[in-house]
Image (cartoon, rainbow, N blue to C red; front, side):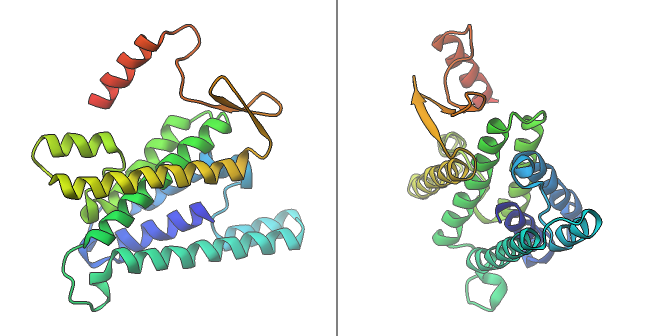
Amino acid sequence: VFYTFMLCFVVLNVAVAKENSPNQFYGLAIGFVIVAGAYGAGAVSGGSFNPAVSIGLNTGSMLRMDCVLIYVMAEFGGAVLAAMFFRLIRQEDFGTEQREPNAASQAASEFLGTFMLVLTVGLNVLAHSPAGAFSIAASLMCMIYALGNVSGAHFNPAVTVAIVASGGLQAAKALGHIVAQIFGGIAAALTYHGIYVLSMYSKGGAYLAKDGKRSLSITPGAGYTVTQAMHAECFFTFV
């Protein structure tokens, strides 16, 4: 559902939205959704994100038809969800008097972008993806292309604070962005928890799968101190 949603949502925003037409980046934005989703959700579902692909693969490998039907229904569900959020965020494309994104559109933009970013991070980490950084960067790039001219596509409270400090955004509007980003991150964490980690226990602040092979935590790496981790986080958040 989620990466079919992302694929359709990015298509609508970069290839259909009036504000983004015409442009030269739509192919890049749409194509890199597959990079984000294949490494993120591929280990869970196989990374189809397309009813034609699901049916075609079933035809070639004779998979169970009931499984394919579930895939197709999920993918169409993601497409419908994408259309609903597109109408919510791009109200100016549907004959309203609104000419610029309002506060609700911007909040929804920041929520969705942060949600897809954090979901991709979580799924890559839990799957021990060999190209996690590439997949995560692709998800961020695609959502920036899709929503940059709606809310600025911060998707990170630290980015929002930096823009406020530089005088590029009013504090009141920034607060709305940050709240949306936090809720987006929480929703994504609950989502990958529900998708991936069905039986977990907590130990020392880290969440470990029952087999002990998959974990997701924000703690210093083995052999590094909190101070070293703090410096690393500070410098690359700065960058």
